[in-house]
Image (cartoon, rainbow, N blue to C red; front, side, top):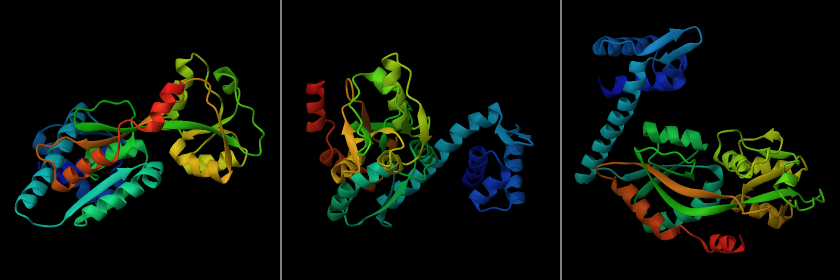
Length: 307
């Protein structure tokens, strides 16, 4: 097995389709098929089940997938550590994050970080929480700033940065009355992110823990700013991060309503791969984030006392 074969194997596993995987890997489909065939012959097992719908991993392929990810990550880690030890090359970081966090949290933080560490090159990748997890797994990003999905993975280190309250919003022109309890709220139309998104999980959990059916989701959107604009237009209510909704409230586009009960919060975390030796640039970023972010903000303390 060599890194090139393993990258090709993971591309097929990710896409479930040889044609799309070949495009992703910049290979002719015949070359990609040859690499997979050689890998299967070397291992003496079939890695994929082929069908008209595409390809799926066999049990042997599923086992290889976990090792392939680790082998490639360790390969990249070794190259970076060797170059750093030799004093070669500039320091670079690829940071993955959600749209909301990028605009409201990382913009000021990274500006300050670059002022102190001008020799570190930064690339920012915006994606959904599930995509960020995948990019961490395949090594295409070095670190993710995201909201906690409640998942445990021993391959990664998680550090809490802050607890961000969510905000219930309605159209400023709707004349909405504050809901008296969650049962009242469950009768209202809502705009929310799709199932699987961390915001949607927090939304559904708030009602599930109270034993109340969640409200009807009249529209699903994959962008928090789109949800805020839809709420402003009167399409429904929304539960979104306060840090994203504050500008719209201040402009008068939407109105904040009190959430009945304890205010839901999202845990803002950093997530990065465990390594024997961290790249110097990543170590600098981790130290800076620990200094600039606080695990508990004054606003959080006020919320807990109010609760």
